[in-house]
Amino acid sequence: LSTTSLVNIFTMVTVDFTDDAGISEHAQTCTTESHALYLPFTRHVITFDSYQRIEVHTSFIKQLLSSTHAHTNTSSQHNNHNPIHSHSYRVITRHNAAVDEYPTDFIVLHIYDEHEAHLLAVLTASPRIKHVHRDGLLYRHEQDVAQRKLLHDGRLSTPWMPFEDDDDDASRSLLYGHFLITEHLGAETLWRDGFDGTGVNVAVFDTGIDAQHSHFSHIEERTNWTDEDQLHDGIGHGTFVAGIIASKAKKCPGFAPNANIHTFRVFTNAQNSYTSWFLDAFNYAIHRKMNLLNLSIGGPDWLDLPFVDKVREMQANNVIMITACGNDGKYGTINNPADQLSVIGVGGITQSDTEIAGFQSRGMTTWEIPEGYGRVKPDVVTVGQSLYGSAINGECRTLSGTSVASPVVTGVAALLTSVLPSERRWQLMNPASLKQVLVESADTIPDLRLYEQG
Image (tube, rainbow, N blue to C red; front, side):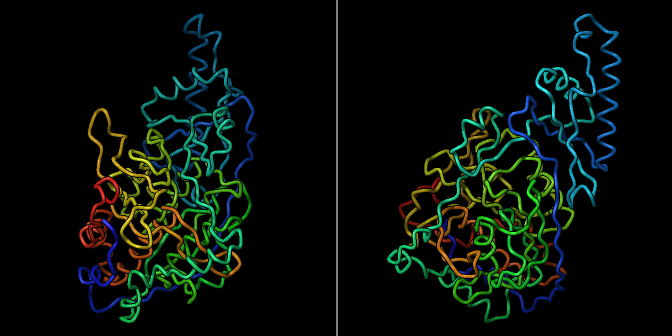
């Protein structure tokens, strides 16, 4: 189903008024301990059955492993050769807005290889521990697959499409550069009625943004979850995604220019990330009561249980996640978490509104197989070809991919939900109801298959 004009969707949710929201400038950063890629250890996420201060979880782990050490020294001859010493593992110190201000439900351990099997068995047996899982290392590109295999089978995220004006091709710019997605979907109709995303908190999980970027007037908060001490966008993808949602620039406007933008910098300049960085950022999004969350990434590893569980927990806390289906261009390659039922998975079509973009991942979902049958995905599709959006330098540029189709739907959602009265808005809007509004009001594209358009 393709996104239809906003005028059609507007008739399903329209009311007569909305409220203003106060804006405050607040920026935070975080630091983590640096890590060398080739040390003989594995990095594990240990998730618990409750939220506690990180010191409480750390103390529990140390007590658990030290008591096991004492027990194994007296239990059997075999275990006498495998005691759990304190130098067999290390709790990674995390300093960021999530763990410094709020309780957490996980810790990260470095476990040195020769002790891995023994420690994992002890940790897995504890009733207070939900999951023991490798801390997946995410790559934006596939050039480092050999290095990734040396570490572990972590999440391999959807590669970004290249910016289309990087080669300064004038003919390309003339052909594609001024396709305005807001004009294409009729956002001006709602703008004229006074709706512009006011009061909606939108989390953008990407590469960050510059605080003084001229295209934005409501950057409410910037946080960094990587091991690089910076908040600004060193790549341009995060700026572009935020611009599609909320740019106020007339040359490349976003759908909801007065939405409150909260940027979560979860990728380094090398375009890498860890599952644990996402978990902390997800926890913070829950605590900060984000309404919409745009995640223009994905990967094939639906067995990353801490990640998948956290996605479901966010939905239970009424954080509406909108995410890209992926750029793998084949059937059965819908990325996680877009393959989850409660997530709004977005695919890409061409500017003609009649063809699926060649790069788009297609359904069905595969994580249920063979125990169950795959689901229909994507949920909706919208234009993901050569969109015109914000650049780092304050100008506009073009980009394609489902990673830019996703913020189109997020921007539409921010604009539409701002139509509802603020005191009832998030009683009426939740992951299920918003998905229903989008899907039921979308147009069917003739001659396209179910697993292409949803």
